[in-house]
Image (cartoon, rainbow, N blue to C red):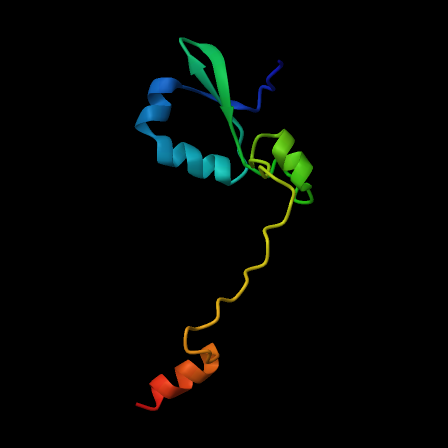
Length: 98
């Protein structure tokens, strides 16, 4: 992988000491290469990568979201009748009038 000269490099120790500053810079759009013993090991940058119109499939492929475990929508809830046979609205009205 080739890194441009414009991309800042910082060592892992500097990242550890200034993590919040580095994350704020990444949030602002900067891409920063993290090095371990001078060797590039990771890159930190903005989440959107300048592509605000990404689809869910794009986000899943980039590892930014976890795909749903199932594609079947959940079953609609079935109301349980009150033991007295009254509707929930009737019970609420009766209790509020006390």
